[in-house]
Image 1 (cartoon, helix red, strand yellow):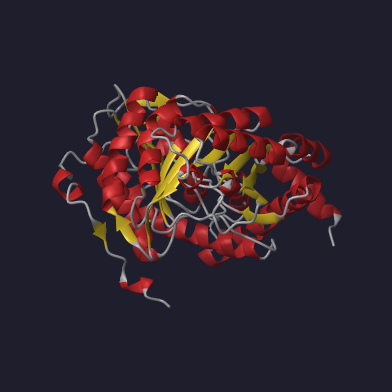
Image 2 (cartoon, rainbow, N blue to C red):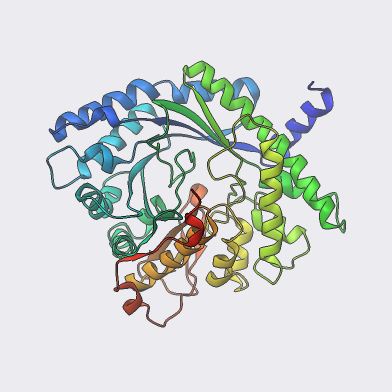
Length: 449
């Protein structure tokens, strides 16, 4: 039973500790929109998205007003577009991205994800067409997000796709002054129900349409830890679990309300701690509250492992269906504490890579010098995909080679994307490694049948 203390506690979390619903995302299957005629396919895509999602934003805004719970973003995810466009007889898929963008604007959402391809074991002709169109597609659209899955524990890592994505990221950066790369992520073990951008897509195992909700509460966890200074880690873990439970209950409430009002099945609550550049809303500051002078120093990986595990344990008791990525995000540009740690040099790319072994996603929103070779970017993707493949977890790379910028500079993205210091990469070449191509075989733990 909800009592007065619970109500007052939730109000405090919202008003003083940055608790919000980061996103209500409607997933929509577009498999029925395939057509040999690309124009007819685009018309079907636009009509279906608008028909299903026309009330998404008004309903989310009504829930905000009624419950006083901020819902920061309203989003749409769709079937990986390479699958939908494959039947169309055309060489350039940019029109499909333009259609997605037009539908998103009509519905009034903040982003639409699913300009995607799943190539962990190989690329079809449609997959390759979509991948090669990404730079132009992201340059010509405002709301479209793109993701490519290049590896999995079952399939291994497609190094031909990894090599290609290094070039695609460079090309995207060059024609968009870097910002296009903020809407492009490369995955290993991508999940089908992730509500967060830029990696959201509506998987082929998902229903016709679904509502997925992503919560966020770094500020709430940070505030809770301030009250137990000096306590042992058992107490720290228990405190985080209890806090994650309360945060996730808010997400469950919003998800159920949105599902009912939109007459759309409820999918999952993603209980990831998603930070923002605002003071007091930082995952890095949580880790520092555990006793680290600066995020990135020795002990950071252990602290993050505790945080991620405790968040999951608390969240799964609070929702009938936890999914997505769920844990703690460490996007450099989107986290005030991470920005500060990277700027002072304590937080390096290598340390971030180590941290990704125990967190929810991977190397996220990291700005590197504009002259970073494409092969170096591919090698960074390969390293991160290997962590995901071996550990049977989702990992990802959202890296931004910023034209004209060098180490010591910073780049301003604005809004939730924040500001990023340009981080150094190793100068030694990885070109011969990347150009081998082929496939890194799946590990022994893939043979689980």
